Structures are given as C-alpha cells and as structure tokens.
Image (tube, rainbow, N blue to C red; front, top):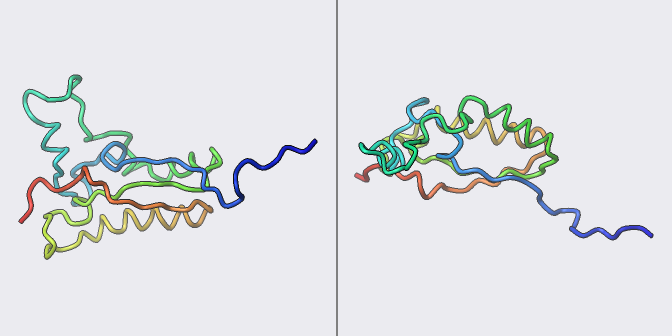
Length: 133
C-alpha cells in the first residue's frame, strides 16, 4: 500500500538562524555595535563562560559554505535575521545605509534563490543599536 503524503507539496522545510549567533565579524563590513556587543563585553562578563558574538559561527565569512550545507540537508527554506547595525551602523533613521551590509544580505538572498531555497528574512529584534539618536 502506498504511503500517503503527510505534508503538502508546498511545505517549506528549512532551518533558522539569528544574526548575532551566527555572523560574527562584529566590526567587519562597517558594522556598528549592537546592544548584544555592549552586553557581552562587560567586565566582568555577564555570560558564565565569557563568550560573545565576535566570531560566533563566522557566517559573515563562511555564508557560501553554510548555504551549501542547507542545500545538502534538503532544505527548501532558510529563515535568517538581519543585523540592523550592519545595515545602518550609526542607528538613526536619517543615518546613511551601509552599502557593504546591504550587499552582504543581498548576496545571501541571491544565492539562496539561485539554488532553489526560499529566503525568509526577519528583523533581529535583539541586535538593536547601542544607542538611538
């Protein structure tokens, strides 16, 4: 007897990440500081093991490898967050947009689409700027 399909054909099977937990490179690409940077760099550290997001999983430098892994796992969707301090380093609504930060996320989105993975982009509410103008 044939096994019935349990999920609809348009079901999105994917993975999810948060920018601060994966990107690292907290000062690369003209990224500004976030509240997490400030929080995790206190002395003494409020984090038991003293860890922070400076390197994380280094997805800022290894995103192509990360996307290849998603594809190899059979994912057809990837939900990831944007680090606003990477897009608007100074944090104000009238401050300039960081072209390098926009390019970083655009490159990820274009690669996902190219290999058939649906990008699901969200705002990382925990990567706000350290101060608002």
